[in-house]
Amino acid sequence: MKLKKMLFTMLAASMLMFTACGDSSSKADSSKADSSKAESSSESSKAESSAADSSKADSKTDSGSAGKDTIVVYFSATGTTKGVAEKIAEAADADIYEIVPQEKYSDADLDWHDEKSRTTIEMNDPDVRPKIEGDLPDLSGYKRVYIGYPIWWGDAPRIMSTFVESVKLDGKTVIPFCTSGGSGIGSSGKNLEKLSDGGEWLGGERLDGGISEDKLKEWIDGLE
Image 1 (cartoon, helix red, strand yellow):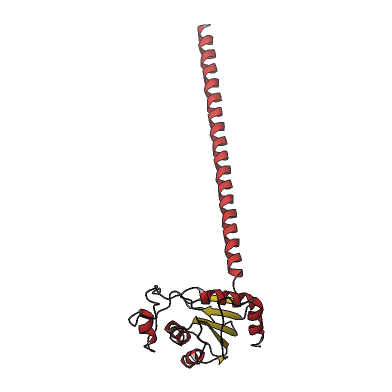
Image 2 (cartoon, one colour; image 1 turned 180 degrees about the horizontal axis):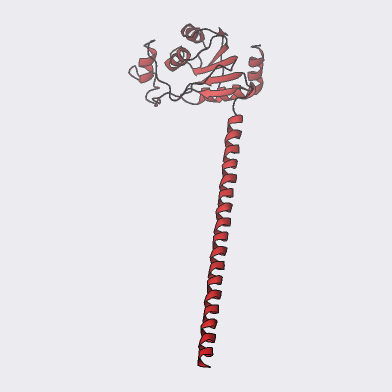
């Protein structure tokens, strides 16, 4: 009888141990499955995020100068020429590029009353070529190029000389325009043309900073 009780006790203990192991294994498998699902969800989320970023990048690339054959290039020291350039770009449905000097001009640099100011020294030396910051625009896809600048000492700033000598304008129609306190465009456009590699240069015009849209459109249409 004692032997039977002992065998029964051992059999019951074995069954309990087997059940516990089974539950533990089942829980472990369930945990692995949940972990696998989480990793799969994470990878899926990453893939969706990557696809969204790629879509945004493509959209940004596609929203460039596709289809436009006109660009407005300008240099503005005080903001006046910038305002006119932006109006031209809108009226002509053109791209726009700002010429930014590597060394910015301070108020003291622009003091034309000071014979030792930076701009006075630059304009007294036709060989000065201020450096331009960043990459120059690729003009290969454009047929028409507006070039704008303020009038300094009766001429275009020397940084405009830097620009026209650094890009290819051959085969393009070039329209110079300027802003000033009262001086006309004079021979500034012709002077830049001499420094360029060619192109069909039009006479150009001085445009007032507050020019109306109608006046601007009239000028642009008259260039046809």
